[in-house]
Image 1: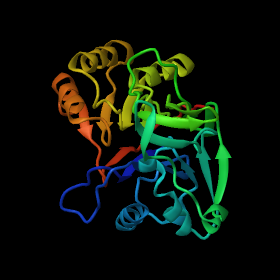
Image 2: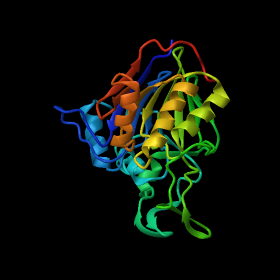
Image 3: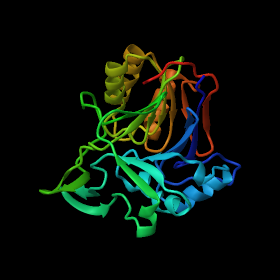
Length: 288
């Protein structure tokens, strides 16, 4: 039977009464199928390594790293993590991950927010794997690429990317998510969900046709209006069977509050550093 464990090791907030550090960014340690995946690395490597130490996660125990997208608050901790290892580790990114990214105004960049540069020694600890399509990572874990944008998303003119023609609006084509399977339904892991939660869940439903039991991560809904949040609530109820939500990072306080009013405290939970999601008996529903 496949047990699932998702442990938050980096987030804007940390569990109170602990020595864990909360800072802008996102990172999870996922255990499934006898393998351990680090999903994102947060912004600051020293905070990531501190939290891993407090939580007794040996960097050598990580079998692979998946970076959800090329923003610094999700990839910034990668250099320090690689330096802490003695053996190379697989690092999975989208082929477009490496582009220059920035926050901007009227198409002009004013703050660089792209992925960090790696030193030669750090690159030697990385077995880079660029993935551009849905890809099984194990029997019960699937890598999912950016969905089509049919519903409201969190892509705006302030997020910029540089390509051969110069700076333009970043449509976040490199965004990756994870889907874990269980007999209780799917567990969806997001970094920022820039392409929109409803878009992501619709894409998963179309391809897999398995109910979603839980969503874990950031939803980047801080720019959503009340009406747009309410639409997400309606669609989660009507189309997705109202999955459990374990939210953090960029979701936004207004969105969290409004969804809690609709789904209750048990339906929408904070997922800070030190918080763990477990399915001890996840069943035999395989993705491959």
